[in-house]
Length: 279
Image (cartoon, rainbow, N blue to C red; front, side):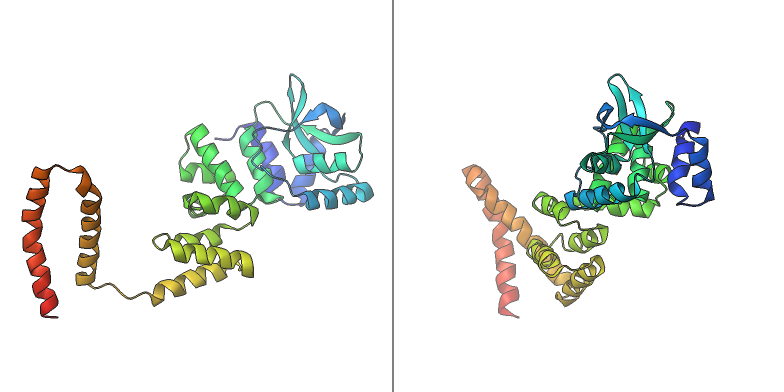
């Protein structure tokens, strides 16, 4: 359960720019700190920062200043960022010497606050959300439902995000760079039994800039075009898989085992020959 300190700070992010947030900000003392006395949080959910967006924010800060203070907590070396690292980075680019800050209560759940700041303000990439949620679940031993409650996300949404991490490793790195979302992942995961089609869709997403729903439709259309499996074709497919496993083991087994396998396989061969001859 969130502590009182956590709830107070979380409220600031879940109420947009409405009256409640402005009231919370008035009740929170805003201070100014030297920008070089503040350090980033190594547990920040956002792992990458878009340089173009940082530069754009820096230009905005030069013109309008920092409109929302940066949340920090006291540490031995000074102050560490809890939320607002993009603003801090942009302020440095803008040449500011000090930045407005609020001190986050010591009893606040830092990890949750950092996650909510990113989820509700400047969205993380889908894969960064997934990795951060997984990390939180493991660190705090939370179920999908529990982590969803902490972050204001439904269980289904959490499940969809975590599913991204089931993609093949060779796709995950590019998935992050291409800034795809969980709907793209759903389309790709629908093709997990068809690696060639999965790679083809992945390339189409990149080359044609397909939206998530378009990727999902492409995957659904691909699956619809596949020949429907009959009980017999399913049995044949399973038999072929078993034969492939036997073939892999064949060179490693003893002569005695080979003779036993041959005795078992010969009747099957005769049945297959009979079926093929009568087809």
